[in-house]
Length: 105
Image (cartoon, rainbow, N blue to C red; front, side):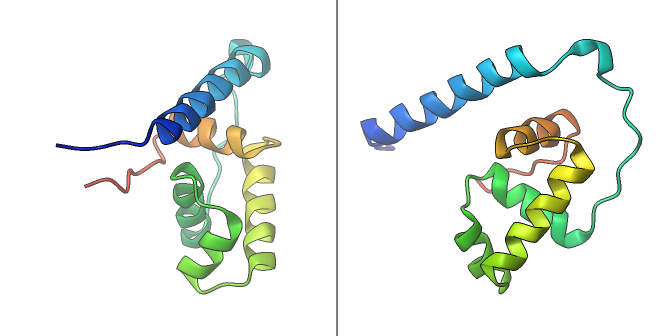
């Protein structure tokens, strides 16, 4: 039996609703699939996965033994390569390109 806090469920539902509304308003299908291939470093791929798992920059820094400022620079590099402007954009890109790996076993 699994017990889940109602507040946790509410926050996750809010995040999913936000992502869906973001996709509807900001992603045009006419440009989908026309992007050039992008290469990410191993560290960038790890950071992408941690962002998808809702880690904050400070948590990512601790997990990877990096400084928070380094994580912010890596995040900016990722956003530039993906041509997105937010964490939601990173998550959407990662899901669309099968880059996400769940941390749930």
